[in-house]
Image 1 (cartoon, rainbow, N blue to C red):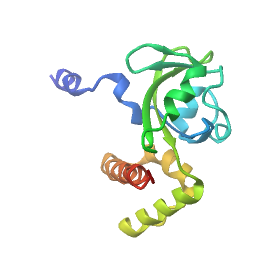
Image 2 (image 1 turned 60 degrees about the vertical axis):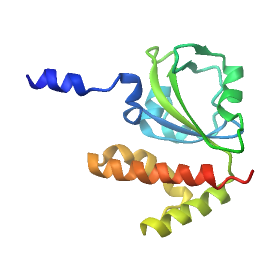
Image 3 (image 1 turned 90 degrees about the horizontal axis):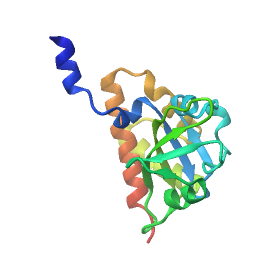
Length: 171
């Protein structure tokens, strides 16, 4: 009886992305940060991911709608600007080591590190906890170690941070 009840509540696998991975790239398409699960999906340790261009041909990408994405078009798709907003894209990623498609959120930042730090300082004032750019990797990697309640709180904080990133862009 419990198994049937749990099965009904389970969301589609492709939308369980926060249990899969998160990658943050700059507008040049180079990975800025990634969590451990994203590193596992890509087959590369997360500390080795910063500096790799997301459109490198070692990865195969699938859009939410199931269409394959050409690596040459990927950067354009991820970094296209619309009033300087930050884009969050859900992509399926596979590679030679892991041919099964797994879903990852990719965030595209249109800001410099100094601008991001200013926004983190704003969040610090709101929540009373100090966040710095050097803490970003710890936040992303540690996200998966917290109980559900704390995950929810951190998720809301991260959503607010991205809200600030989006709405503080100069047009």
